[in-house]
Length: 469
Image (tube, rainbow, N blue to C red; front, side, top):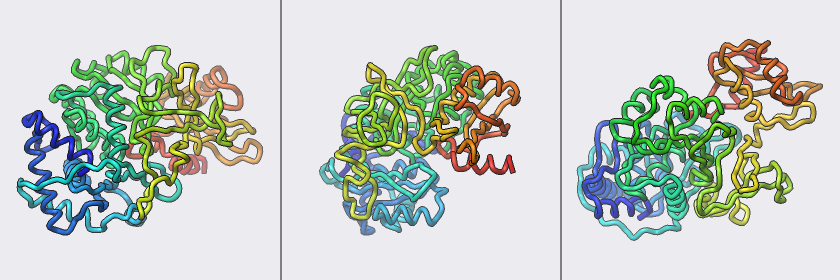
């Protein structure tokens, strides 16, 4: 047995009638969920599923994915939830990397559709085995997935629940995809605390707004684009008083959006994390008027964070963010499930640039892979984008570049909003040093983003080429 099922057993013993999961068509109390999971596990065992296997699942139903996570945990198997829109070639590569069963999706769906409640005896919980595989959200290069053990997931859930206090009676609304760590981590946090996880099939701002009150939601995880749509939907009305923490991550939160949400009474927490760290690494709550985009506070309990130069040596300035701690992955996926790939003596060197202040608080400056070099000067797109989004008449902005013999990267800003190029140029001359200023502005209806709301930098370059062709 793995972590998730062991925590369900504990909750069912302590509070059998408490709500564990809220799905679109059904609400599961702890006792009922336990019986359902046990029956599904027994069925899968009868079909040849054995402890230690990796069960890859491709489903657009968050209820199916959540049930499968509990069932895999009961069986002592690892779950590998995959994006239902994943191309078949990429899916095959990821399944091969993880050493997963090809027929797992069919078996899980078959079991959920036809098995009644029943009983099955679980094995003792083993912390060290891999419990979860998560495909990384990067859009470049070969597919990769992280391996997270029960110990990793427990450390991550405990650190989060201590920083954003979560307990029995609380409810966390999950409208992020469960095939991303930001969504899946909610199941583990709620199971650890005995809280309720309220599942949405996709992000519908009207339904989210309604359910905040209907289920007395105490915690919610959002990406900035979701927060913006929620504010548009609710007309900048304050959220229900039950909401204590709105965790905003998955991409840079602009100062303008933070100020708008803060004025409406949203309890914002700027957060930083990734699949390789089991979700959260650092989180800053109670954002004030002088908050600067990228500030995410001190590392959570159990994490060590350092800044290193390109040669791997510690630096007091800007450099790569590296992380160590109990929640850091066992390693990148490989068919033998051999730990350590992607780690250096337990440290994970991220693809993000950042710095630490004198109090040890982290400031995230952008992706290493996204850095542009214009006129021999390194330019971090997020720093320029944060300035552009403070300009009146700019709803969203992204910095990209075209290859140029003189500049190297000829900086071009793609802008959503009514601010014209003259106004934007003046704003940048006043707010940015010369080397960081966009040399051209292109107006677009919307910026390309992935399922988590992050800017798709590759699609951004393609869009720019089409616009300037």
